[in-house]
Image 1 (cartoon, rainbow, N blue to C red):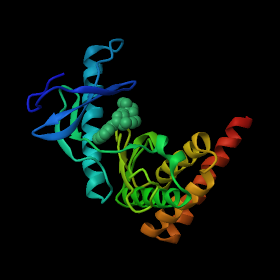
Image 2 (image 1 turned 45 degrees about the horizontal axis):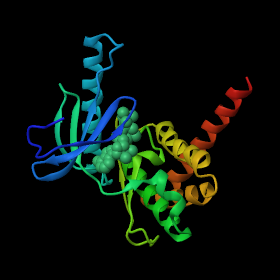
Image 3 (image 1 turned 180 degrees about the vertical axis):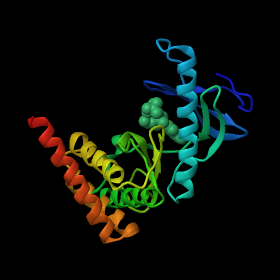
Length: 227
Ligand SMILES: Nc1ncnc2c1ncn2[C@@H]1O[C@H](COP(=O)(O)OP(=O)(O)OP(=O)(O)O)[C@@H](O)[C@H]1O
Ligand SMILES: [Mg+2]
């Protein structure tokens, strides 16, 4: 794909179920082009509407999340008709692939930071909706140092504006589930650090309320499985 304001070529860095991500240049800046592909089995008019709506939603939510003080990529350009978002290329690797190489101190630092990021979103009425370690980028210096970590939250395609406690708990529950499933050796330490970071932003009362709700979701899940 070549873009109007892009210089040089672009190269595919990721092909997801719905979107292709290409890396290229936008007005002299290192950029990512996230393009939601047409889905040929869907009625075209419906497909166009869905892709347009998800593109608009994601762009809006990235913008709102940044305003909340969370780290997200800068938005450069949005074309709803083409289902295209152009945003800042973030230097870093997915947390999913970096967790195992973090030192114990680094792990605590990164997850406390993540807790703070999520708390800032929640405090301003945003639910991420897909908080897995694949949707968090970590720029780190490769030495496992706790000082140079920087997290960026990406993939806001499922984000919502909400003030419901249940929605905040669903976000935390998904991180917890991802940790237990994909990073079991460090899951409890990482989750505890995350809650500590969350507490630092919103205070102990809110952490108590949201963790109680996470426990309630887990209880419902167990009950549903038994039935
Ligand atoms: N701004 C960015 N800078 C660098 N890499 C990025 C950026 N945005 C996305 N990526 C890379 O592309 C991958 C896929 O991006 P993303 O998670 O947004 O798409 P997706 O999972 O296919 O989304 P969806 O499920 O909404 O279609 C990420 O895991 C990350 O490796
Ligand atoms: Mg993703």
